[in-house]
Amino acid sequence: MSRRDGTTWLSPALLLLGLPGCLSIRGPKSVRGVERGSLTVQCRYDPGWEAHDKWWCRGELWSICHILVQTTRSGRGTDGERVSISDDRSDRLITVTMTGLRRDDQDVYWCGISKRGTDLGVPIKVSVDPEGTVLPTPESLLSRTTVSHRNMSSGSHIRTHYVLLVFVKVPILLILVGAILWLKESRSVPRADLEPPIHTNSSSDLTRDTIP
Image 1: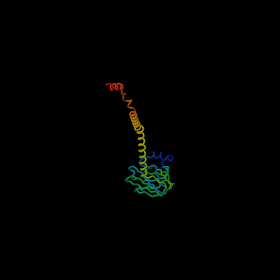
Image 2: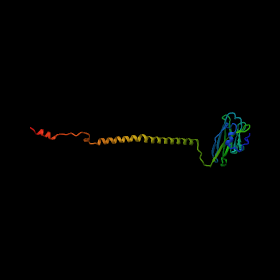
Image 3: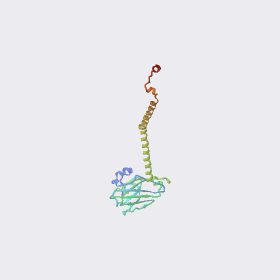
C-alpha cells in the first residue's frame, strides 16, 4: 500500500481529484462529536473493491497521513486506541467508530481503500464540540424544517390576505359605503321637491258655493 506520489504540496481536495478511481469511495464531508462522547463515520465504495483492505488515516496531507486502523484480508477490522473499523463487504460499507473523544481529536481524516499503486481515499473533517454541547438529531432537524415550512406558509397566507384586502375587499367596501350614502341622500330629499305643486282656485270655488 502506497499513498506517496510526489505531490505533497497539493491540498487534499486537489490531490483527491488527481487520484485514479477517487469517486469509487464516498463519505460525508464532515462529522461532529462531543468531547468524551463518540461518533461513527460510514463510507461506501463501488463493486470490485470488496476484497481490498480498508483503512482510517489521520492527517490533512494525504501523502503523510497516519493510519490508525485497518481491516485484514478476511474483512475484519483491527481496533486501535479509541477507534475501530469494520467492512461490510455485502453492503460495501466501511464503518469507523471513534470513542472517548478529545478536543485534540479534531482533524482531517481519510477513509481509504488499499490497492496496487496509489490507494483510494476520501477526506472527512472531524469536529469535536465541548462537553455538554447538544448536537441536533435527525428528528430535531426534521422538526425545524417543518416549523420553517409552517412559517413560510403563514407568511404566504398573510401576504395573500394583504393583497386581497388592498385590491378586492377595500374597493368592495368603498362601493357599499357609497351606495348606502346615496340611498340615504335619496330618502332625505323633501317630497315637495319631487312632486309638482297642486294649484287650486279657492276664490272660484267659494263663489260657486255662495250663488243660490
